[in-house]
Image 1 (spheres, rainbow, N blue to C red):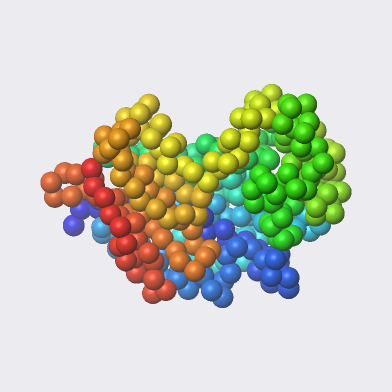
Image 2: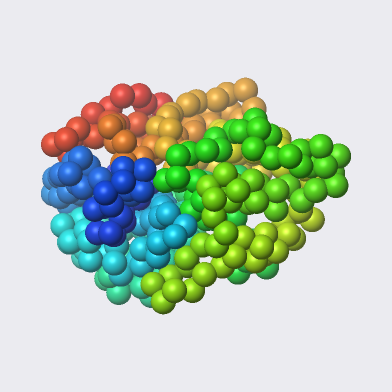
Length: 341
């Protein structure tokens, strides 16, 4: 049997024992082993590894590991701590990487600082690269964070760390105070200056979140290194030179929408299929208006009640089949929607 299937999963958000065992539910990692581990282990072992005669590639499309979700007054997880806290999952990934299946790892934003050497030491044989391109299928996949405002990495700003890292540290498990711009307006007394272009949007956002959370500094590692809010604001001051206030507000409103990005990539680079993660919204969509027969798919996430994967394959007629599948607790993928070029 020909190995032609490409499988895509994203946004597992594995974390450390400290985060898994946090007493406060608002301070837990997104992935909860008691709820989510069996489904993932079953999927990796039964629907991937045992099907290696059919599967060409398994693509881990970002945010598989997560060192962002952590309260600001505690040391964030290390990647080694995350590896050690998830032995069954790591064992399954190692087995896949050593099989005939190509295991690709595409970093996202919550694992943006994971280095190639560290990943390949933990999972020998894994292929670490920023994007996945298949010229034969005219397919492009990546996490998607570099197409949105708060999670884009700029090498010359904050050493490449997206500002979303500090937003997550301030907000994620402190009550979710800011979800939309109107929340920021209600918490800040500097909005008139912002709208008038006289205030740095990014400094205003960090300060508003810090004030709401009652935070003056953020713990950066287990050695006790800390950054003050003032230092963090200074780090991201150059972002205002790249994004004017109105532009920033517009992009903020579209933070969770990646379909237009897929359209642009298809128009500029000739792709027929674009696959993202990042938004946690599993979806498949075909568009023939802006781009003829463009298929957009999002692999969803594995840290909620439902988990999904995307499966891409060649049909007998030579077309590209793209399936969005819900993954049951047994690990079996069930097709919920499909398209083909």
